[in-house]
Image 1 (cartoon, rainbow, N blue to C red):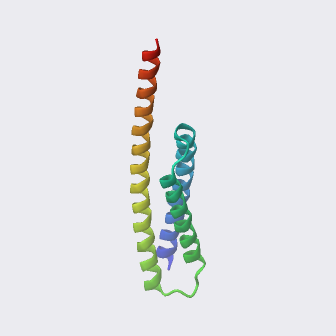
Image 2 (image 1 turned 90 degrees about the horizontal axis):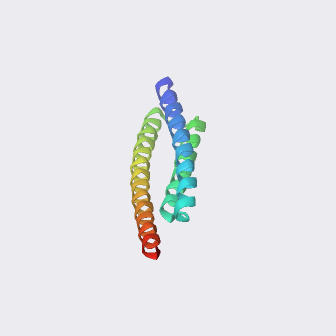
Image 3 (image 1 turned 180 degrees about the vertical axis):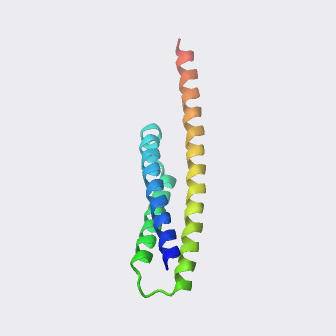
Length: 111
């Protein structure tokens, strides 16, 4: 039980840290690009993942094997979400750089 509780605590901590980082990225990207449906969906998935962790922590009736399976699924979900957010951040960075280049070229053409 102790190892599972420690793992859940660690997952909860990591998800909380991800939530803060995602909120910061969302604010920066929203200002730069006007928002992103994909990022919004990723944030919704993170909220779902966080709720699942909290539900798992509150469940006193689950068996040890069930809890281990839930933790494994949470780890997989967390990694999938991290990869998706990294991909989205890279896409937005490239889009913002392209928009900046286009803007600079247009301003140069006006001179």
